[in-house]
Image (cartoon, rainbow, N blue to C red; front, side):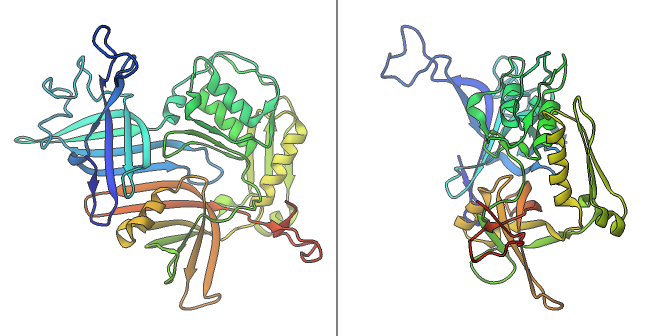
Length: 417
């Protein structure tokens, strides 16, 4: 059953055991009025009482990286469970047909004031039992999200017609050799258009989607609730932060640690975009190259529709990365240090959310710096004594609507809606 921590969050860890329940049995189950269904329901074992720790990491390091496979590691007290997790224990209540908690079975981790907020939904990738003489044993379950499955899936040859990037992602997920559930998708409408591209036998499904994401300059990831999520181009936005973090007293949520990034990893003053079947599109900022030297961002073999689309992408990327940008790189939040409702709010954060971050200083100028940033990766460290959340951040370019007779014509912080 769910377990409530001292800081008010309630946690629940569920693992698919391979058993089924409520299966409809001919001449036994009641038609229309009973709980039974065809093929039954997956029986998730609630293993929360045996959990020693949980660690989760999802996302990417920078906005120029592809999303890594989300991972979750759950350490369980196998001795206290009477070796219930040990695949060598044929007396385990979780074993059916000799498999039990086997690879590719589902794992779900929840938090919140009523353990209703998913932190991770994925599948078992590995189950290791560490024995410590004479009779101690610890089970370590490593789970991955469905980006792993896409990385292990290869396409059969097909040639889709020209379509938006969002439609191309859906077309790949719809392929019979991929067969990704339509109920577990959230696909935003893309900005860029993919051309007529011939995919070959054994092209990797995740690599094909990653190429589309590069062409869009967007995101594709598995959400905390297990949904395949495509987000369109990371561009100027009228969006506002859904959560504020600060080291000053007030209504913003407190953080414990924060780091600043100001390096060459996001400084590119020459961008070269290779489009399949066309010449390389190139955008260069001569002022930046004179100041900092040439730093080239090269993207190759993108499935865009034509040269003009490559030119547009190169220009957009150059605008974002041609100059060094001071940014908050990562912050950490300790749920122990905030109320249960605030902790639940933090648990609701996901990749692509906008957050506001404020840092105050006792020396220098200005005394306060505030930035609105995108969440690009999230990690959770959960033990009986603490729950730490780390947010990896990426730059966001916010604009406000242009107001006639009020906004300045050449103000880059305003835009037409």
